[in-house]
Length: 96
Picture 1 (cartoon, rainbow, N blue to C red):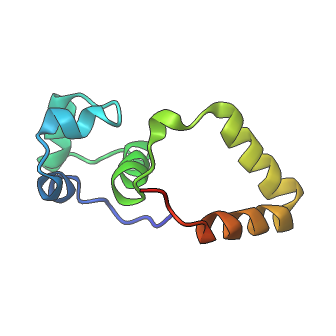
Picture 2: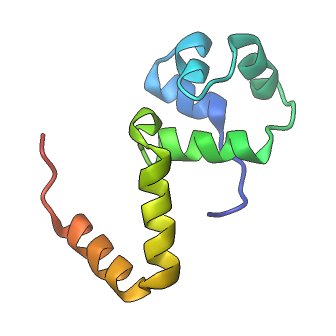
């Protein structure tokens, strides 16, 4: 993941969300989000959540610890299988 800062205010405005709607999806209060949008440094974990939810469009409410553990296991113990599964998942047509 790149180290660049996510433009939270820009993303929020583009999506047409108010601060409460936008920030609550990643567990940040409206007042905390307002401070970030006003120039306060956004901690790296919050930046990563912003990127996952609003740039990568991942529904973090559906990610479970055991899912993450399987991914980490595959990455470190069978990287070829991990790459193969990742490629297959990307090639799969999206439902919609």
